Image (tube, rainbow, N blue to C red; front, side, top):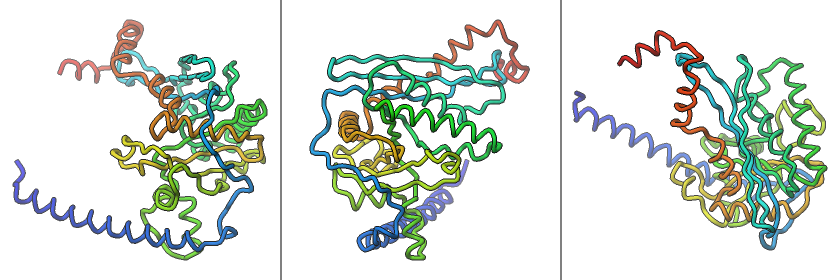
Length: 329
């Protein structure tokens, strides 16, 4: 048993380190805020498109959201399984109707779920035969994970992904990607380039949590990533929005609790009403789009359901010696 005195001494050491980190963060954040007040627009990668003034959230609209979750069973179990669970939620607020659809796609043995999920999720969301005026997805539109793939493979994926986005925009169902607790530093990085300073620990959402008024958007910035250069239509803009309703769950888990990042395709037709729909969804979800939260809750396969699936398929597989020993205790 560890000596209590030693543990308390260690706790004091950690406490001092954390206090120093908090003080450093507060100082850096204050410095970034001051620079933001004086920085010139031409010093930032601003997009030509800017968010229109939204008087009030859009009402009586139709919207789709989709999300995905990996479905895997241990390779030591009776059945080796690797798949993606998809969920799509369509809500028509004019008719007061909600439609939920689920789908499970089996992955090839060599497929990596984190690389396959985004394309499958986008295909599922924009492939719905419903008259949605907006499509919301969870996470980024920038597929930086594909950078590790061979050139021909990633080019093929990017072209297909971009085409799905363009087609959806042209059908007047723009895709907006929403990121809660974003770790992005794109704007802070640009400020660091201007000042030559290092604002360690400060994220974009920290900055905009301070400088934005509630229910307001930051300027729209142009994203820069090597993967975006593989298709000339793959131009992504991003903007930060400070919610009027604070997300208590995000605050508890360490997020800013009031700032989300939204990404969308630049150079495409995007109706002003889409931003009003987004605001309404964020208000309904108390800081995060309600319809995405519905899709997420639906797509996740719970532990007890995985166990039931495994039991159903067990007789068709073979349990490994390691798993037998684990079950024997």
